[in-house]
Image (cartoon, rainbow, N blue to C red; front, side):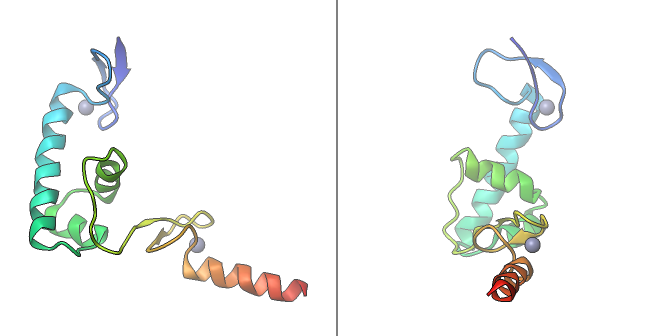
Amino acid sequence: MLKNCERCGRVFDSEGSEELCPECYLEDKKELKKVKDYLNKNPLASVMEVCEKTGVSQAQILRFVRDGNLKLRGPLKEFKCSLCGKPVIKGTTCDECKGKIEKGMNNKK
Ligand SMILES: [Zn+2]
Ligand SMILES: [Zn+2]
């Protein structure tokens, strides 16, 4: 079955559940190990910090988390603001947008 690799977009022959081409699969494992090693030493590191220190992209780290390969012990769950797309630490909207929404609500009263 031909699939597009989730990382590089190349078409590769998948035997079933693989989402990555063989090359990216290896690269992925290396990055996952790097991230895990870093988190072993710094269990409370944020995604941003891990990203900076390991050179693994934030999207990639979040993909590890999403796929269940990585569990973040830190209190930080970084996701994107549903309104402006900025990274948020908690929840689904950033402080700025949250403020705007709250203001908007107050104005309607
Ligand atoms: Zn690939
Ligand atoms: Zn926002």
